[in-house]
Image 1 (cartoon, one colour):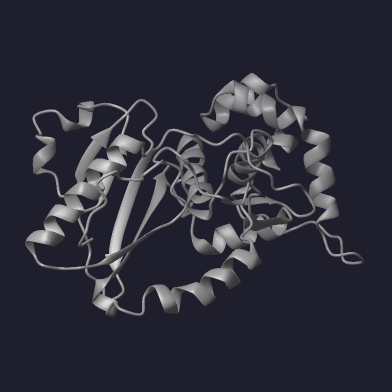
Image 2 (spheres, rainbow, N blue to C red; image 1 turned 30 degrees about the vertical axis):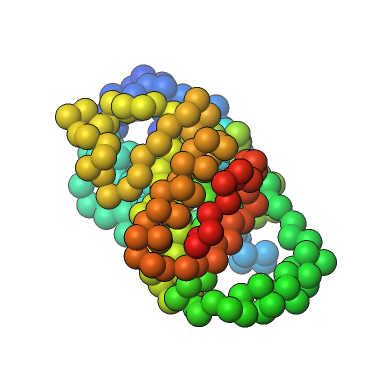
Length: 276
């Protein structure tokens, strides 16, 4: 609240010079002067509203709150460490060398400003209970002639490597919906047996030779790297992978049963493997 008090006798430029911060930051606080005062008063206990004891960090708190409101309006996920980092940056800009940005400060800040932590809403899929029950009845019969070490499951997952966390601080009572999330991804296919034997993971990207693979041969990677335009599993990639697994199992004289989850490709092989 120091900025607001100083604005009674000084201009935004003079306050910025005194505090060693940008004029824009001071102007942003003053634009929300009425809102900040209202928030300050409304967050005091009902019949015990009083002037809070000054801690010397009011300017830092004001700047963090201003930044937080802007981040929430843009649906940017905000975590505790991020709030503390921003607070330390603002404190440094203000020349406040005593500020620590500790967990205690964070707890006090979110409580004072009526901020809570929650999960940002997003899409989710439903599982058919009928399908689950049907497979629970089928599986014992299908797997009857196989030992646990011979029962494998392969599933794929999308690795959204530019995505952000779904958890974020937000004001109590406000919507905690997320902004449009990054869809840039690679596909990772993982296969393992019931006893924990793992096959080499398959990673599917868009480029045959990504920039991050400079001077690296893909066949030397600890995964099987493949690519296509959408970085998805495709029929040709799946068939080639199945033939490789079949060949390896034949060499090891290992007869297995392999389950695939939600395979979106046509993987019917004309020359069906005999031992895999």
